[in-house]
Image (cartoon, rainbow, N blue to C red; front, side, top):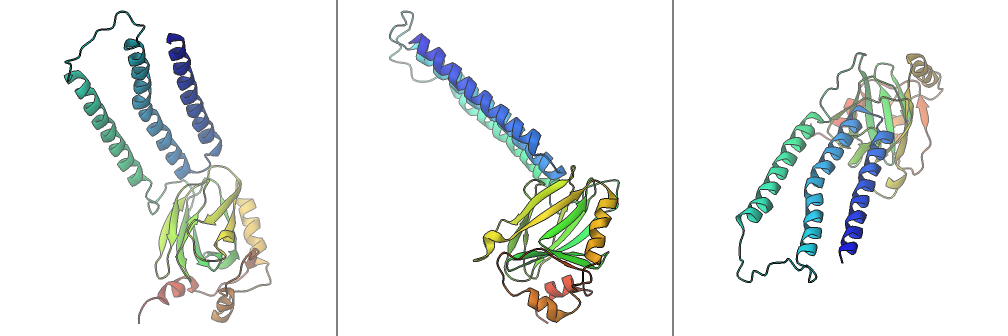
Length: 283
């Protein structure tokens, strides 16, 4: 029996060690942005705190199995035992302390990771207007008066401010490797600040069901590690022969389409983003 207890204890410790190392590995190799880094840090802290509950329970289980085993000649028979202040204190005080710690950490982290909260960096903030359509994403660079469909580019270590709205139904703007997601709602502008630490190609998506073509409503986020690469991408858009320079062209763009390929527009008519928001408001 004692041998079996040691085997079970060994298996439990191995299991939780594996889980801890796997979570740590995921965190080490999937942290690409400021927000995602903070979220992963929170998950790791909460996991370690939870071990303060799980590990003692496993140890106590092993201890009781050993103590009240029929082969234990030193066991004490207590038929009239009915309460213990020590046990009652442990099973109530420890959970209260843990829940309190959970609450404080979660509250502070959630407050600090407010998507609309500015993220400080040493570089000039880049502003991008995002409009969700059926079923694609339109990205507008107001400073350059250019736009793209299903592809967006940003430089690394630079604060990026996304102004997000929808021209149809509600969607959710989400780049999993960078962290926060936020809703794109008709008639409303939501803000999302992000910073990516590493260059690369990131996948973006809508995480909110919005109809038949929702599953293909994805985009590519290009993160460049130098201004020259970013400006080269900007110049590619500026050289496009396609324009989004009047309301009629935008209405054609709104026609629902599945698997829409990336498109570049070298000119976007002014106030397009604000007009999309205002069309849902009563005059």
